[in-house]
Image (cartoon, rainbow, N blue to C red; front, side, top):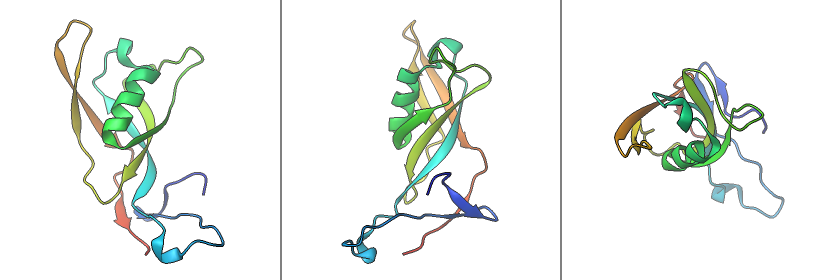
Length: 119
């Protein structure tokens, strides 16, 4: 299951492993891990604390692409987030800067998928 999400022609397959004593009809297929690109962040906010905050607003934060010092560099910050595929992906979030001002940050999935749920 590593390397999720699995897709074919941009159609996402939501997969889950099950134990031998689990009922396949009761396996939760609502969550899938995605890499989300976060835009419009100042470099001082491209760190694990902010990545976790944003990831948990989108879904369930999993991980962040960062350097050895725990920061990201560049135009975007890439975070891994488990997203509830039954809900629309938020496209923006307001955060407060160190000066107390609100700033709008936007998100995208690298390639916006279509969803195919296997039940």
